[in-house]
Length: 246
Image 1 (cartoon, helix red, strand yellow):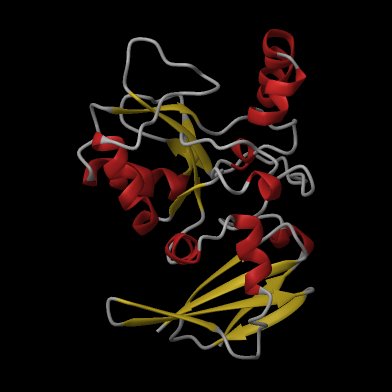
Image 2 (cartoon, rainbow, N blue to C red):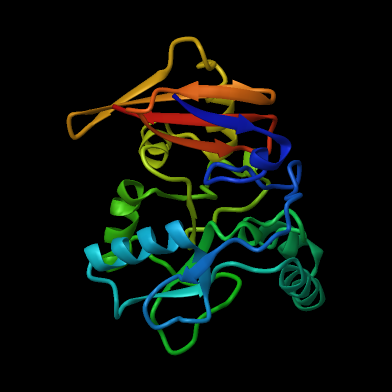
């Protein structure tokens, strides 16, 4: 039996943590990062997210057409971007497209802004169209654990305007389920609360493998049979998501 200890620290870590204006990022420790994409060695992502992004770009043949614009940011870098946008674009624009320091997914290392490669790229609102290789990327993203984080019809929930260029790593199969159910991350974490640990799970089947997803409230220890592959992610919302593979 494998034992996982659920703590305040683990609550703030993992691929499913929610970071927004109502749930600021409390853990400011830098994640273990790798270059996000070929040709952009200074733009980083959390290691697992970076590996999946590189595989996704290779799958759609986008190595020479898709470029990373912005990945992991320190709190200081986010503050500088926020202040610069306030000065150049004003508060209305900034509230729509730039998260306040401490409330930005970029500080987790799990978010990436992408663009179609061009001579001039807008840092705040890069062009990432629905057509061509960018459209292929968008269609395949869920299979590699990525979702478009800020959709056009979810602004009232996310607090951010539609951003076709901003992708968030949530992991597989969560990205697939979120897209099938048309749920943003805020909605998905609320949805998972109906599958408490010890009860009936959310079940998902892929490639002849059964996957079970649970919500665990509070802190303490949970035991998982040794033969089960498990992933435990904090949510930054008072619970953990436990994903088990058979």
